[in-house]
Image (cartoon, rainbow, N blue to C red; front, side):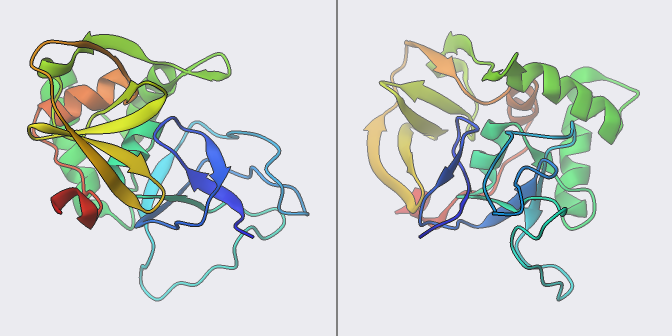
Length: 202
């Protein structure tokens, strides 16, 4: 039975079979029975590589951070995470450059994390906002009829834990509920291109 450590574009931590291409953390979220007891512990939500310098971890060790898994980087960004400055240093620097371009100086991990915290949650719920679908950059997630859809080129791709299974044409004019945090959407609009699951190209 899968552990409850997969993250959806809505930011929910669920038990699904698909592990995905990326790992991350939000602090220690599980108890000694490997049960999720909180949605986050710290402000710093990062998205990491699943392999880095030969390091190996035992999943959900007691008193150690909870390893979370995402289908791809676009999913992690939608959930409110940002690139890890260590294992994804090049991507982090790209993210930093686009952030600086949109929001100016000074910029640091602490500044980004504080802004992302405001943009991703409202109380204990995910913060979303309305926008016109045609105005959104590639890599943004939107909610339609209870499903998370990735904006990618002229299409919308339906999220599942195993990849993108359904497609629909992107409407030229339609207001939608945006899942990706507003500040992250600004970074995407500046040209930061997130890694997506290979099924996005099929």
